[in-house]
Image (cartoon, rainbow, N blue to C red):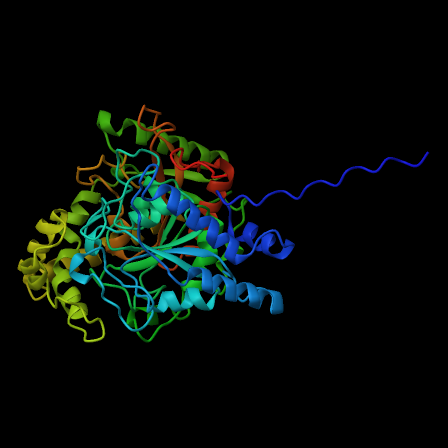
Length: 503
């Protein structure tokens, strides 16, 4: 009697939620998925969760050409394979980054309908790598603060707790990635704005060394401190995106400093067993000491134990002179730069902005009340003032203090909670964030998921807590090694319960 044939197994269905670049490309090659189908799946989630269901309110503009671009990529794939490392990968773009086929509003009614004629440098790099810009997403208006509320779209919500903000200013990107609207996202960061939503949404955010990634074609806030960077659900995907974004751009003179300081391929640092022997400083001055800080402290102390458990030497630091709030209030120049840098942008004939100055924005009056204090303060301040130059001097002292601390203690990196307390409820002002050390020095840092606060009726699995790793200039590779090893050992990311899988 011949042996009975086993029934063929049905091919596993492609799962969009929590997918990665690698999984998508594998599905393309097996024939289970096309770029067009992937975009359709992402658009279905946006339709289900952005204005319906939990009403996250993250998307300002859906790319009207996304399906057409996906179809063209599918045609090229059948002919010659992947066109680049991000072939067919949907990306959420913060709406202060230029796109020549969609408006760039910076979240402000003052710029509604503004259509700069060319893509930002990073937009072009993403297109060249095969990525699809799926949508332009919400930000705190003009990237001025951290709750992600704008006059164009209003308040974006945190998918882990709909009563809370998603951090900011890149909160539309953070919430959208947490809700699996797309696979990758772009944020910009002047003080906290990539790492705050990464922390608040259980994702990864990289603030690169100043000059590693071009800012050309991005609405500026403070060119002394502005950077753009990748956001993703995994360190691996964030690093693959980083590879695409880096490089010298004549349109942004700061990128000239990157020559000779970059790696061709940062994925070589994705090695899970490279933490042994690394010396990581614990920046206790960035921890809270009050009852409101206990849950974040608990998560961060567990992260420190985990790092030690996988081989890192954890070094306690005594640094009362490094205080995150004082760095913002006494050293940061973001509000001093704002009038000079934003006025220059608004007055550019190519931008074709309806208003040309901050004074014009104030007179127009249709901006979010959440930026009123900052925008009026910026109008009063000047980069020609003695106070501005005093802050720049203190900035150089802080840079020197930090590199000396790391040299004296033989540190590879420094670790601390990105926020001393959980991200704030809607209607409150973001407080006690620790991103200022990276933004004011211009040094790199990475935020990765560290865990969650205790569950509550409004936060079924708790509120995400992000762990920040900070290093010397141009040490992205070293930070990636540390962040990846920690991520792989802990697997702290969890899917947002308000945006489950769709049938």
